[in-house]
Amino acid sequence: MNTKADPVNILIVDDEPRNLAVLESILDDPGYRLVRAGSGDEALLALMADEFALLVLDVQMPGMSGFELAQMIKDRRKTAHIPIIFLTAYYNSDQHVLEGYGSGAVDYLHKPVNPSVLRSKVAVFAELHRRGQELERANRRLVDLNATLDRRVEERTAELQESEARLREASRRKDEFLATLAHELRNPLAPVRNAIHFLRLRGPATTDVQWASDIVERQVGLMSRLIDELMDVSRIGQGRVELRRGRVALADVLADALETIQPQIDGAGHKLSVLQPAVRLQVDADRARLAQVFMNLLSNAAKYTDPGGQIEVRLVSEGGTALVTIRDSGIGIAPHRLESVFEMFSQEEPALSRSRGGLGIGLSLTRKLVELHGGTVSASSEGQGKGSLFVVRLPLAMPVPNDSDESPAEEAVLPTGSLRILVADDNADAAMTLAILLESMGHAVRQVHDGEAAAEAAAAFDPQLVLLDLGMPRMNGYEACRRIRGQPGGAARMIVAVTGWGQPQDLERGREAGFDQHLVKPIAFDQLLRLISARLEGSAQGRE
Image 1: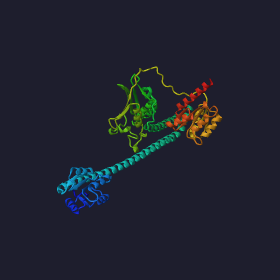
Image 2: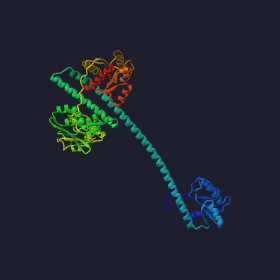
Image 3: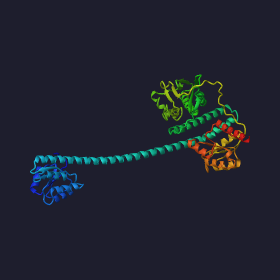
Image 4: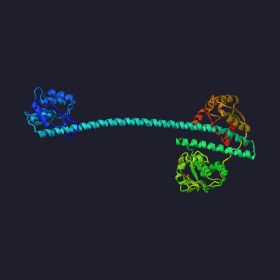
């Protein structure tokens, strides 16, 4: 018997004290706690006070027989499970034995009992009771463990939900910050670019003035590109970039990119070679976005190649894929950096020694844009100081023969005609430089610096073209647009948002407010010319 376990309770019931003493001597064991009862009533009281593993019960007792007591025990839910061993010296017939089993007995022994048999039977039921208790304790522990696990799951789920909410809020604030940063950075660029366009419209300048103007124009363009890239990375990360796909020739896309980057290449004294096949390779792509890819790669090649270096652009087809390779003789890339160069804010030079500029987001943006087109971009290099090779692979559309009669894109020309133009911008420099630029082109211009003044000036001046900033005091540009549209003749006016706010939601709000177009500062000169030409053509058609 296992003496280390808690002793189990065994109830022995007999009206003869001598019989009880015999049972106690037979069942004397440290693993048992024997409780005596001299009658059925005493047995019931004991059963109410304690829990028992087994009941050893004499059948023949005065007042209440063992059979009657057994029946009462089985009728009570609390005690119905207790096994009963009947002991008797008188009831030996089969009828009595059946009556005993019918009242709930699990065994029926005759007096005088065999001590070994009784001990063996009691030991079995005591062990069953112990195991039942262990199982019950294990079940309770399991229930407690499940409850604890459920509580921890609920707590962890709540923590994850809170963390997700915090991340969403942080992402929202980051987007708001980037949008505000882009707006604030674009606003100062607008008057600078306007002033450059004004100087150029005044005619040929001295060499030094032209040199200074070119520098300012290039730096404004660079700053605009950096701002656009910063916003693009944020939008792509949120899956908010939609490609305007169409069938385009890669040669035209490369020409777009080279047109923008050529001043940077020429300024560094690099030798550029472009190798293309006779067949025009076409892809299904967003022309502007794909041009942005090659602008980034060409700009990197020019930036990380010492003055007087070489840059080679090669376009070939390989099966159903177009390969555009851009090779330079620049500083190269260390082998362990070939993949990390495409990560956000990755720079080949450490921050303190960096002399080539940039935010380190151009190549990350490049990879994302190429992947949106179903392609891949990879980098290779023989090591530092041995140049770099970038390869862009894009799925090919069906090639078509080279069309030598295809006319080049038309350059914007200064339109003839005069318009009444209202300029509204709370940035006084931006409003003034744009107004002076428009006046130098022969237009009648009014400038104001808040939304209410814009609505009042529109009613008095009756402009044909309204250039409205969005973030203005007293009344924002959206509300000013609605007010101007509601005036007599307002439906015929062309109203254009000219702003540093360029997020998709800004464009959607602009359309809902009644804007015809949405231009992001700083406006390119050819954009302004096309805008004026479109309004002049609309006015002429209206007169017809």
